[in-house]
Length: 171
Image (cartoon, rainbow, N blue to C red):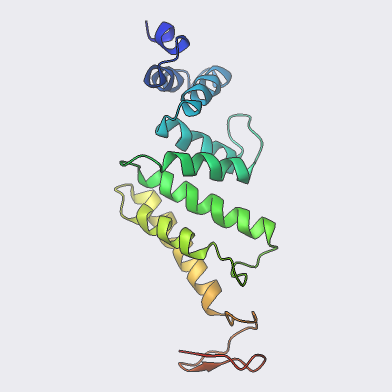
């Protein structure tokens, strides 16, 4: 009955059937996961976001689709920490790829969004996700603190900082 319900379009049945096929039939697993995600199942969206980020289950690495599905998985009230971490990871990888490693672009910065969702991932109960989110936050904060926010010049290590290029001051 589960396959019949899944074939008739019941998203929870599609997700459940996808999980039963996850170990031995990857193509069928991916088919039902995609069907469930297309109907808005947040768990299926979370899986697809992770698959596109890591190029799993025969899918190509696509950071745009990873960010899309991870963001879709966050649209429900009760998202999990894996969804939040997947979204923050896809966002930073996409930004690094698009903007050649520059994360703080004048007028646009993905950093606040990335840090917000990484901190939400830290609030979850999964210890591996907490550790990964903590590491992601520390990497971003270290990268941002070491440059002038105005002109991107490498900052010098003191409590009061003044950029010699643009003369901007910050504490």
